[in-house]
Length: 509
Image 1 (cartoon, rainbow, N blue to C red):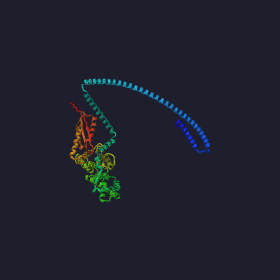
Image 2: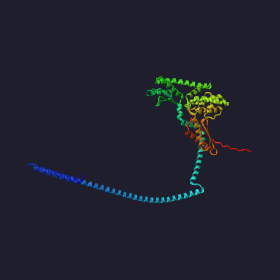
Image 3: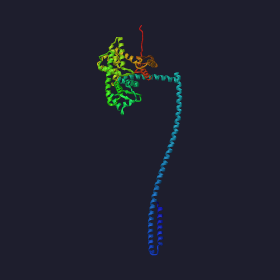
């Protein structure tokens, strides 16, 4: 509270107290009135003394407060003056900056006008030069652009062809890596059909209720069957069927036979599954042996190593584009033998090569590489004659064929694989595919003639040498191959061969 309010209030309170005491004493009765009056006077004197002291203290406090307030006011005024000075300085700075900006804006405006004038002059010079060039060249701008673009396009194609040629030459030094990439690309391109044909079997069920029993409580039956056979079982929404999936054809057959026996037996639990799978494996292995021996006996080539016969029997359960590989091998053997007898080649070597040429497919899911190379290595380890090993290795040009029997095997394999109906392809679709191959090849500029040969496994293109150089021929082969991949569906692979031939003829007189 301020001292100016506190001091009068205190004095008023003291006066009220003194008055109240005086009135109280006046009302008292007669005895002791004098003593009381004296006491009252003493009290009043003391009160006045205390009031004076309090008044002095209040005045001193008021002086202190007033001094502090004046000091604080002086400090506030000094700060306000400093702030006002800074604001004035900032305002002056802003004014100067505004003037600079206006000056720069005027300068930029002048420069922009100068640039516009210069740009207009340049456009005039450009039009005059263009008219002069058109007059000298006797060509319009559009015609000159067309000529230039054609030249640039031709140079670019030549450069691209040269680069492609260099890349191909460099790739030959890494033939093994290149071969794996090509095989991988081919597998990816036809993965759906190939996988479905070689890795999946479908077992029909009498009723859909059996699916629950095959799965078992918490899946224990299907897990036991998968662990015992190494094959995946797929129980989905397919009505009354279970899909057996795996890359090993023998294991897949064991799983199919075991599951069929379990369904007939009716007792489906882990212990029974292991017992049935063991019996089914013995049956399938015995069947593999019998199939191999029957094929050797049918072709008339007894005396082969038992392991070779066993692997031959595995082909009974392997298919390629819908064609059973063992039947295909026997057919190739007979075709090769007949052609060998016609031209005077070794009939036994040709027949043996035909029977064993795809034996690598029995283990190509276990060993990396081409089935021709895998099969040749297998035959070499088991004492098969060297000409047969060479023919098997060369029947897909993994090495260059050097013998008549090797060439006969290539021809017989193509005939058996690509003849109408051999691979579930109708005659009409087969003919259309050959026609489409030639049509794609003939659509390229510079092609003189094209031929689909080897039952559609190769297309050979003859080009005009004066229009297509060596580098462009390499580029054309790649473009045609890509076009075939994008527009055609076909089994296996198709070789694209571009032939460029230049002949110089002169007569001596």
